[in-house]
Length: 231
Image (cartoon, rainbow, N blue to C red; front, side, top):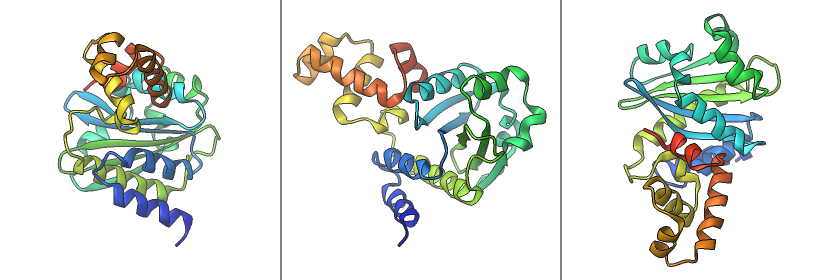
């Protein structure tokens, strides 16, 4: 079995579980892309399910927060995703959508972060409508192999539709149990001392877990954490 086949098999084994996100991100990284973003569009809102920049973790959080803060409403692919039939997985390249993209959107999500190419999968299931996007800093038009991108989009759809509602925001799936607990405490408005008491650890440990979590999530503040975990 090839290395790619083994990684796809690992993603299939992890479908619906909290181990999927890191395994899936590892697979996507082998495609040679710089940024992965998975967003669910639900009615008139967007939800970040996964965002990862493989060279600059902080940038992933910044882009996800900007997209959730109204950026998704100007996504030139939004009408197509809303109109797509259930059970469909479609591929779109940056060249296909450039004519419909306004200058401000291009500046925020391409020029500013230094991203030149994009491949997006529009994946629609029974309950979810997903943008699964792959970005590259290389100006190639396509961010990665289109067949593997489409397969990755289908894997993401299978996983997020199967995943049980654990009450934990999807972006936190990449964290350890303690890091998740700290982030959940922050999202509930609890102070470090209270979170430490809940976990039976020192306040300094809470600070350490928070720093590790923020690094993995690509955020630098409570505001960033709230942004990527907002429904």
